[in-house]
Image (cartoon, rainbow, N blue to C red):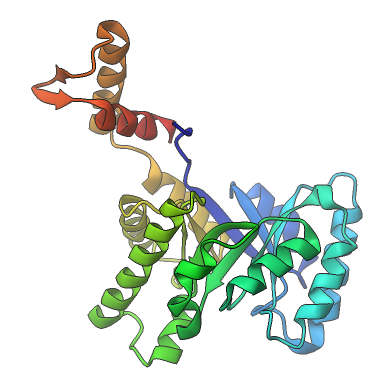
Length: 274
């Protein structure tokens, strides 16, 4: 049985803002993503790559992820060439924007030798999830809510949009599980000032079995981590379950009037692992 996964926060930083790199790591985010895509204007792509190279050349640099432009983008080839020149010890992996085909993932992995997070941001990408989930080098899926809303013609924030995105979340979760990928990462939450809404959203994707979330502002990191903590009642029950499992060595037993078997024990381990 694999160890329970720990939900993670992935914080984006525009790679054109090197003064923010250290601040991003100091925010408490589990992972930092230097962005070469949407937060970087076309005229600044080369500068983003240069700032990343300078950062990675620093002996004190902490490893990061990179978000690359889509495989069909005119900037993708230069992105790949730049990644291959970076010190591999400082690059954990890459996020491929607007992924649509399995070959895009496996080719990129072969080129750079790093794990790939595939971002589903188009209707074509949604249609090919099952195929892409079997790609060599794929670490996890995520998705882009705003790009998808625009392409599909749905109103972002509406009940109808929630129905569409829940269908997508379910597909990502199912195919990630079948192919033993890291659980998918939830998309960005646009309002970084509404802590209560961030925490409600966090509870939603956590309960759906997702393995983390993309953050766009350091304020979101603490709110997400707070929401991921189990309640006192959950923690106490989980502790009782594991204590009784160790004491009794039984396959089935009771705790506080509830039947406990292997799935409940595994859930208790997940709760305490947070």
